[in-house]
Amino acid sequence: MSSTFDQIANIIAETCDIPRDTIKPESHAIDDLGIDSLDFLDIAFAIDKAFGIKMPLEKWTQEVNDGKATTEQYFVLKNLADRIDELVAAKNAGTGA
Amino acid sequence: MDLDYFQLIDRIVDLNLGERTIVVEAQVPEKHTIFEGHFPGFPIMPGVLLTEAMAQSSGWLLLGVLKFERMPFLAIVKEAKMRGFVSPGQLLTIEAKVEHEGSGFAVTKAKGRIGKELKCSAEITFGLTPFPDPAFRVHMDAMAEKIGFPMQVLKHD
Image 1 (cartoon, rainbow over the protein chains, first blue to last red):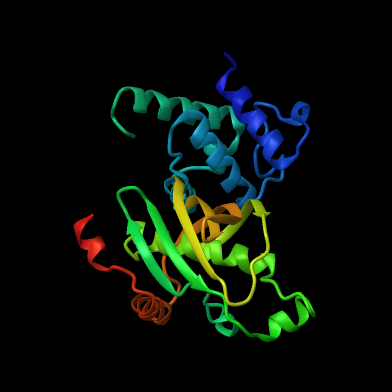
Image 2 (tube, rainbow over the protein chains, first blue to last red; image 1 turned 30 degrees about the vertical axis):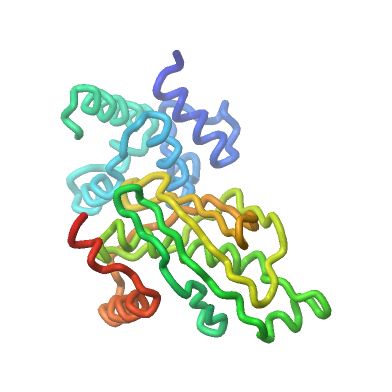
């Protein structure tokens, strides 16, 4: 079974037509890969579907806007993979987070 | 269908918030300048208008799901397929369902039919934002009443 990062990278490559080999765990979705908000919406749909979760994009955006979090925490892909793993674990634990 | 005002939906036939589906009707007018150019001697509904009609149908469904607390704005149209001609005077029936409700966005699938014949379909993504202007919300309330939006279903969901 492929890692969460690999699944995300494959989704990004397919959705945004970005060569897969340029997408690294350290890549920042916005700053490095140039993904805009509309493309990210498409990616979020694909990730939600693939993992059976609902990524709290609005909450994350609010945290960044309020200075409580950095974009790196959510949009550097290895960190995004960690956030997704947390959401999947929460779902499986039945907490619905 | 009021093409001049881009109000393409005439009537909500069914809204099921439990199933997250809607069925609407849109009467294509017999005459309009659009048909004089699209096309001379062979008037048909432009595909962009069929797509817009599917988007508006989905929009009313999402307004119901969101209890009119947010407005869905068209963001992405995928797999839009024009499967057959729609002519002046025909009654278009559009059904839509929520495919996914994400954080700040929603995805629907919509299909348009004339009678039983499938004429168009699409997967449509909307950004969901608070109403940008109170007057806009008032306008949507008036439109909802005009097309028979069943406001009572919001109270029972």
